[in-house]
Length: 96
Image (cartoon, rainbow, N blue to C red; front, top):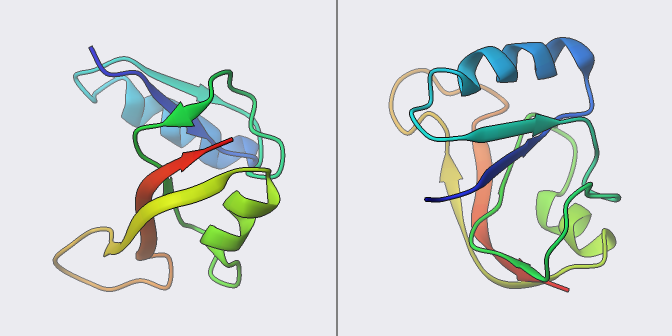
């Protein structure tokens, strides 16, 4: 079973993420935090998605948190429909 950890620093957005996580169909742990201090254990992640901060370099933030980005691809979420400023994201693998 995949393990999903959603990290959101903003309380209001975190509440919304918890609501969405309950409908995800897989276990999702929503926790407070920021990329610079990830509140999770483990040496590597199978995937990481970054977004919501229109002026932040997501890959740079992951590297600033002490991770090495091994592979990644840029994606837009949602893939179809109205493009919002928060649509560009990264999906990939990073390890410490």
